[in-house]
Image (cartoon, rainbow, N blue to C red; front, side):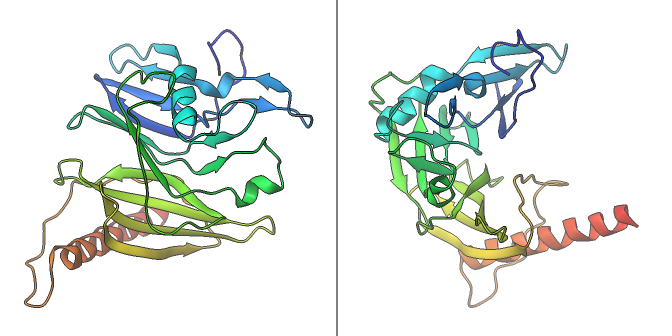
Length: 246
């Protein structure tokens, strides 16, 4: 993690593609001890991997994470954001972040369990330290123990529809995973749906393309069609997984 000078590995939380490289990031939060003192900021760096050489470039992402925190009014020492989902959109030429947690109080392991947030953020590359120009809006319903664990742009939507996973996790060990589809204005295209109990899914990907699209029925709109398409894709993926496990 960090600048790559030490052997300790990075706790990978999100990945995306940008400029022909894969970028991999972590929580975006500094590590602190029980007294709130900063131990290290190694999880605030991003790794860029060149597919041709597999060379790893270590990028200091603290300026971007700091700008996001400034915009959300949870600066260093007084709060934090924890990221598990981030994507670069070539279509919009912008970054999109759906933080899992947000707090305007110092980190506390117990209190942190209820700090999940439903905040969508978008910014240009290298936003100003003040956070000026960062777009923010809420999406779905705020649930204290349910936050975004990953999201991706729906193929064919011109990066305007977002498929997202939110995981619900309590201190007692109760876990569940939910899925939904929204647009960039946070309109709900597929209502949040429970897809797994006692399991925490933290990643999503499209397998074997997207489609073919079924014909729209006489009494359904685009949102209903999208929901059926997703259900078909999930069923296809489940079938493939069952065969591979066999």
